[in-house]
Image (cartoon, rainbow, N blue to C red; front, side):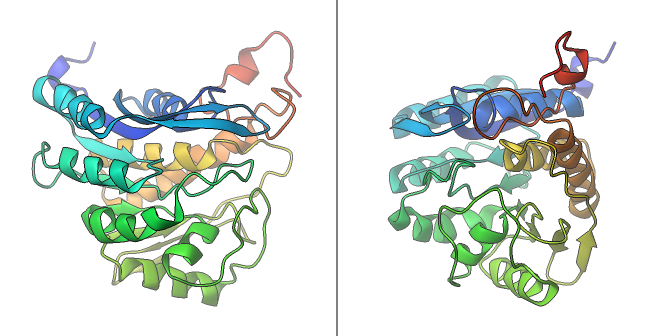
Length: 284
């Protein structure tokens, strides 16, 4: 049995997905899969399923700060994953909350802008605040292709999700460099919207392609959350950013491959814990 002192502690600051596929729910499943203790600071509550996001209610800035301080003061935090933020007020609160953590605590920033269903999850005015206040604090930023285009100020395809398109090597390398110039120590442009489905890692010196398969028969809702949470977990476990990014790509890819396609009428959720394989009735 592991001693309490050996258990790594990872905090997810993100929104709640009532359908259990993405957001805080995906984060906690990914943390458990990676063998770390997961904690949460919820930024927003969504009414969401596999088809659509039907309502979003932000959590008050004061409550966001209080959640982070509560776990930091008692349990401790070895790494942070930041997901859905939504508003400028929330971004400001998260910036304040990070001050409660020890200097040097690894931060993985997943700049969530759109749900798998296409719903917008980050207000356009908040994108500038995200770039100015949180990207420079990130140990690793993990935008997908569409998010990287938006952050870099390049033409994007807002609301188009779940499909491959564009993202050739030259464009993706340019995007990785552009996002890195905004301040994070390292960037992983994830491959879910690229062809091929490889991630691209860049830390200002090293540009590394992290190969991965596309799983057209899988289910991808929550794949970005799973990836960033697994990356944060492996940073907490002591891996360097590139090694952690490789582990995250493997975890997210397997979760999509094993995704629960038959769960709900839309894009099914990823399965990072293997419940589909244990289900008495196959969900496909």
